[in-house]
Length: 493
Image (cartoon, rainbow, N blue to C red):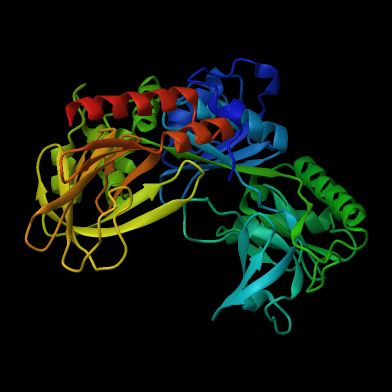
């Protein structure tokens, strides 16, 4: 995943060129803050949820939108999907939220059509090389048998954030659609994807009366939003989808209906009518979002930080804010940890995010101590190899003790042998730490400071930090902060 250098170079400035703004649909735990941010910057927010309608003194239409902004399943950030120009403008805006907001372009956007090559077959599907990323093709949507090396023509059904373990979900029958409907190859009656059976029956009756039909060779699956739209809007949405079918047919050199064949001999993108990006919010950015949300409604200190931790914590925040006006105070880490975790004796993962977008688990440790500011983890290590940077052997029975202080820009890991003698200390410099119930999360900023067993201090990986700035993965502002922290640690150690 590559972040545009100009995007990360915004350095906290909001977009003011309203000519690039469009219509946006927003969902998830960041909705109120992002709605306020978008409205302030000339965007039209549409299809608003009931809570948003209550909080804002504004008219929200139920019309087509240029992009959708949705909170990721792990609540770490948001996905942005829609027309390329609008996605780029929204990504620029969201990247300005805070110093530790990262935005990555997705080379496998939702709806993109690819020639792919099967690289591995698993129990339930195949791993497919798409050129710049892998996807997952379930066997249940495949006719026939797939073998390693087979070429397939597929479409991305669901995009996936670069930091999650899931690959983008793929399908073989090409689909064209939007907010109101999806066109799928084949024949059959029109259907409605809605739990409101009465509204679905009424819609189908009106469509039959007005003779609104699918293009030849395609069938329509209407979305729930279609039950609330006008007939003119439905007809316009169907015409747009039909035009996209014709466009895809021309771009693919034939019928745009997919299948287990591929015209090309190598993996790559064939057609994409939309773009996708992913935004990761760090701790500082969550508090910036708190401030934006506070302009609209009651918002406790750490609102988004707590909600990002778990669904149970999210419900607790809503309860507190509904009962009273929270005091403007420091983030109550001890109280949050007492209620939701982590607590002593529990296992917590170290989630090591990388500026390029991917995520590495450094393993899990047991919580040995926890106070009102920090969590201490202890890991017992296996033998083999040596400790990165320290250059000393890693032996069976060694232990690693890591102290994470909520909100700090660095954390130390002390390595000891089985007798308790210190083998060295590695201080990792990163975005402000978040100690969630099951995971400590941050993004690594490359540069680190080491303290060897003999007391010698060493600073490493400045070159990697400089390279990350050059490629646009890390902003100049964030890199300056990382170097400042490294210098302070060198002096302190």
